[in-house]
Length: 434
Ligand code: SAH
Ligand code: SF4
Ligand code: F3S
Image (cartoon, rainbow, N blue to C red; front, side, top):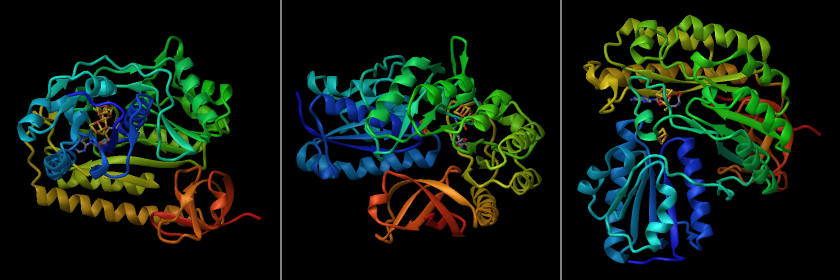
């Protein structure tokens, strides 16, 4: 089977890292003469870039694979399952969906054009680590104005609940020069804002350069207008990094700092390497040095043996820190992780109850935090028209909040000062400053 210059559709599940990888894969496919199409029906190759972080993420992919069978029967489309699930459970994917043609792990997905063109025996599985080679292309992206730049891959933290170190392998950083070059290429292609990505950006290292040095290099050696990053691990958050946020005007004032739990006993069982007091102290310093910073987090409820009282500590943490917003999850057992050896003893209905209570609290806190924005002037990178109202444009503030305001499409692709007039839990609404 040889397929060249065909059409393709990539469906991405999971985190920004996967979105970034999909962008690289799309650029590589385009360079090989392939062409992206909108729908799976029109594609000759369908690529699912998958996530293993929770059971629900994996169920969703198997659900989608089930739907693809009908298309496969009708037109013989080639199906590739790539990324984190491919890495973790390649054989099981082929057992449950034998019509899948290619299974390519997190470091092998970029080789897809070669496998498509070579007449590779089908199905084929490739999941060795360490085969990424992606220099010399400008990745595709959803927005013309903002882009993800991967600065490191893998993770060495082995938080006890987490599959990422297993599916992404050992942590390795890309050289500063390469990242600066990538940002320059993006700028030349119209990008105004980059988000630097790593599982733990604070452990970035290239020779003598740490993450704070990398930020300074990107800010001073490129014409990028705005810089964001994620994710920071609280145990490694340095004063030097906080200083860069305070002194470098291109740095956006948003910090995503996953807490996971407000209980020290649970944090210890999660292998997070900090106490709530240490975390709180880091937040205090952040807010002292960068008063305007918006802080967001990740939280897990129902970790093995979490008591009601310990769950209440997570609620208290949300009240004390007053997060601008949070990603909140029910604990999900991941086979092969250290926590999978513990008994998953918080019953599912109880996890759901805790999650619901947490979400309700965060919604109130988000509402209050957003009210504090009313009356302020924010700068928005306008990246599109509101889906609900074509006379309204939308974009992100410095603090990564969605701001909507009435204006024509000529504002798209500009950075605009906007008066914040009203706010709800999820969005701000404003008027452009005259
Ligand atoms: N490297 C990042 C993101 C990791 S995955 C970090 O360390 O913050 C994103 C989030 O998914 C995690 O922060 C955690 O809150 C959640 N998560 C990871 N594994 C999980 C599991 N087994 N069950 C429930 N949530 C999980
Ligand atoms: Fe997972 Fe922890 Fe690594 Fe984040 S830091 S990817 S939660 S192991
Ligand atoms: Fe991201 Fe999911 Fe993989 S969160 S790193 S796509 S397991």
